[in-house]
Amino acid sequence: MPELRESKPFSGAPAGESPRLPLLPLARLSPAGFFILAITAAAFAAGSLRQELALSLVGAILLAVWLYCLILGFVMALVHRNGASRMRLELGPREITAGMAVEAVRTGEARFFRIPGILIRCRVCLETKDGRRVEHLFDPGLPGDPLSVPLRGAYYSKEDELRVVDAFNIFAFSWPLRREPEARILASPRPAEDPVPVKPRPGGQEQRSGPRYLRNDDMIDHRPYTPGDDPRRINWKLYSHGPAQSLFVREGESEPPPHSRLLVLVDTETDGALYKPETGREAVDMLCAQALAMSLDLAGRGMDVLAGYTGGEIRGGPDLARAMAWPASLPLPGPAGKGKGPGGPPPELPAADRGTCILALPRTSAGAAALDRFLSRRPSPSAPCDIFFLYAENGPGRLAEAAEACARLYGSRNAVRAGALAVAVSDAISGVVSDADSGADSTAVSGTVPAPGKRSTGAPL
Image (cartoon, rainbow, N blue to C red; front, side, top):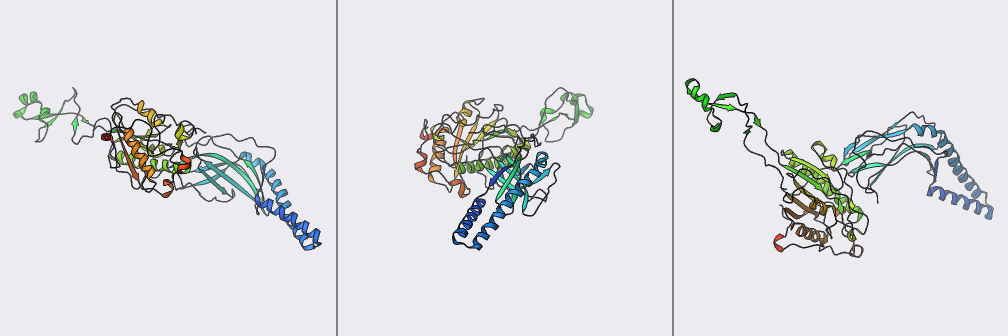
């Protein structure tokens, strides 16, 4: 299973070396080419057996077209070999919101020689670490159609190539182009339109409603006392020696209000007993959209918010949306994940005075997942931590039952408050594997179930 973390921080700068081109282009014969070749052979055979010149003529025409596409396509590919070695395809803008489009631009000195029936095309193929793919084919000599990126994710180069094809799509001859090792497109999620009504507990000091002043030894500025000033700031020595015994207050530097601190994490691990790979990726998209909506809302209220995900970096400020473009779906380790590989490591923990809010998917086992490792590595066992297990409200009841069981299990831990919340999502996210495929009972989570008093519900916390 490939590593599901980004290989390096995204810089947006093009990189990569030109590939060593083979002596001959890669040739592909399409199913249409096989079909035309079979019809040609059948026409010649029927014409020979029935002694009909018309059938033989049809076979000869089809064979001529087939050979024309083969020979001239191969020659054109050889002619453009040097141009392919100097060409690179650039995409821009490189950071977008899911649903937007990017432009593919050809760079490098390359001149294209064209003949009738033979087409020159550039092909861009991008792929995320969790299997999403986007392909785009365009004429390098004309302004290309925009490349649409409908889904969130970090898209890497799968393959870029210069392709020579015929008008009948019989043969395709291609040369590989330069590939970039880092992500070429970061498609950030759109914030959820209907965010879940959660109120996570932040760490640090709460916001103050009134102003405060720094206490220091350099309070030499004074101003006349006005009703409503803090009487503790009156300079009584100046009152006893000043003119007409007027009251003056010491002026100090205004102290900026402290910020509440919160870390929003997305647990990207999906349970193979509940989610198929496709629906698991959609469910992670749901978590990212909810996490981004929550982070932007709390940051807009003045809270110091950081965001991260399983196996990735923690970011804040203007990088909140970018942070939610990286997460890829990870299967749970162990029997529930059917041995598809270990989960990603938990992110590095920030300061102990920062509260934590984790958005996760329901699961059927606990103990070896990144969520459990994160809880065991908290800087302080008493640091506030809220865990919300989200599931599709229009999905099967198994998801709701598993989310409730997870909330009861994790809510029994010290300083951990857990809840199960239903989210309005598309029908694609609500799909789960059948009972025959799962081999697990989703109504119970393995582990120690807390007492009934620790039960968490889907009500807002």
